[in-house]
Image (cartoon, rainbow, N blue to C red; front, side, top):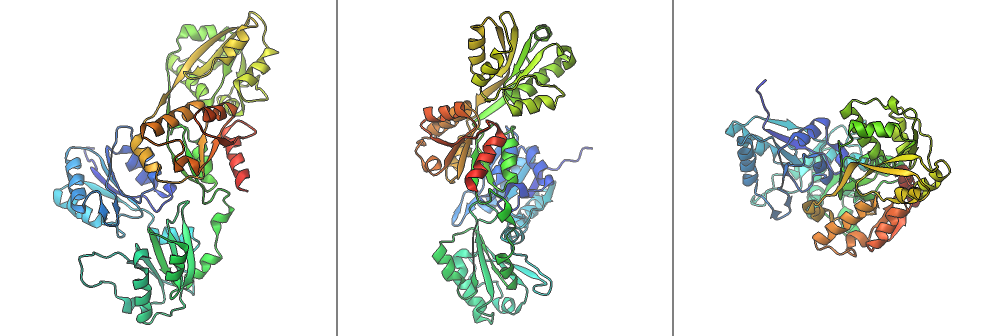
Length: 504
């Protein structure tokens, strides 16, 4: 079919990057151009194609990077060039997001477009805070009102007289800066001053703050607790349930913001942290790419060797990429002993149907050498499957006892330099910054330097540094960082378990 959607207006939901819909995520992955707002979860941009043009069209109060007219024109002009354009908005595009204006602009220009709804903040933020916007026999309706009207209008369009008479839940968006006006207007028009009221700022994120009080006292609580925009004001009896429903308390990393520095394709660490309730931001300081470079002649030599050593799950996957490329069945290696550096690498091999013969007690190259020393003898041949930055400890030590060690580099680790993303990340504070390889430490540190950020910047100083093992810990130390979190088992799961122990 020749039909093509040129523009997608996508709601990302509020705060939590996992609240974006499957359909919205598909549009993000296909986009040639993304125009994104200030309140979208930054992490969703990690799903964009490497060559996707990212345009920050964010609007902070009284500070607009692009006017609405400029945004409308960009959507039309980029689509007219044949590009797939995604307009990303926090929450839902049509709930105080000006998505309607953008849709009208696209209609008038004759551009094909789709609207992908998002979880709207008046519902999502309240749910994360434990407040049901409706509840049988308590509130049978809810009403969403803007707390930030067009500043050029002389009179308010909000009918406080009508709102004050409603028994349902009232939810004001973008109203924290006008909370005194909103609460006073409701009371003046007859709303009970003792009506339960909540204010939630930065909802669905690790920075979430919430206060509960009465309609007459909530503004004082907001000032006392230093609650700032963005946020919502919820008025009604259902607010009381927010003191009872606390579903996120069972998540051990709830309220924690964690920065990871792995290749964005290596998702195990991020996914595990998300499941435990953390807000995870990635700065992939490295990229890992498989090299399809092993020849059939090399494979024939490996088949005849005494040992094959794998020192990372990535090496396992890259080796199998080469096997598939050459259409070679691993059963040809049945006479070769298989060694793995640790449990994660062992698991990766077992998922391929391979039985692992040797795993050291200590998951380091030094541990591998110790484990192999009692298994090998002079004249044996060992092939070490590794990446381009891997240390040569195994070759150096086993060669001393007469073992022929051949290193086959099957994947390449490179520095990722995304200063625009790092610029946004540096404004955030993190509970933890995690490193899973010496190269991630080195390249993250170099990226900070490229941006003129000191290693003593608040981004680092206020964070607890975690390293997957002693080698990565030393790399941290060499860069002026102190890694306080080191797992007993040098694996992703071990690192996560250590963080959970720290929090519990």
